[in-house]
Image (cartoon, rainbow, N blue to C red; front, side, top):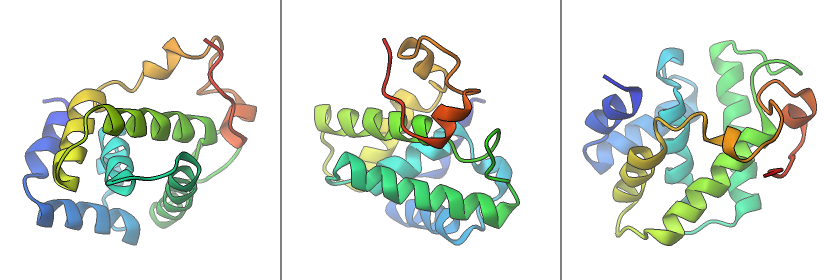
Length: 146
């Protein structure tokens, strides 16, 4: 079963969402559970009901750096936190929430995960270079090139 569907099956109510996001914030979410779909879910939860792009990106950066440290993922020029991908996905989630406003945080998270939870390669449509491996893009925001 795809990771996005597994996560949607888990996030059935606000209490489950609170527990999931809380575990991420506390650094106790198991490392294998920190999938692309999980990134989208946390971003959507942090973005709802309304967030400015820069503020959301800053919250996500701080959270991902802390989470990575908690689970032993090194944040280096070649691994761990990636500034451009984080900002890219924050912008996608914010645009999705603006286009499809939901009445609850849970509904907003589930909608974002349903649309983007398996789309981990979407960035390739917006960048003319290998943004994942680019050390500059990992360190600083590089706007889409396409």
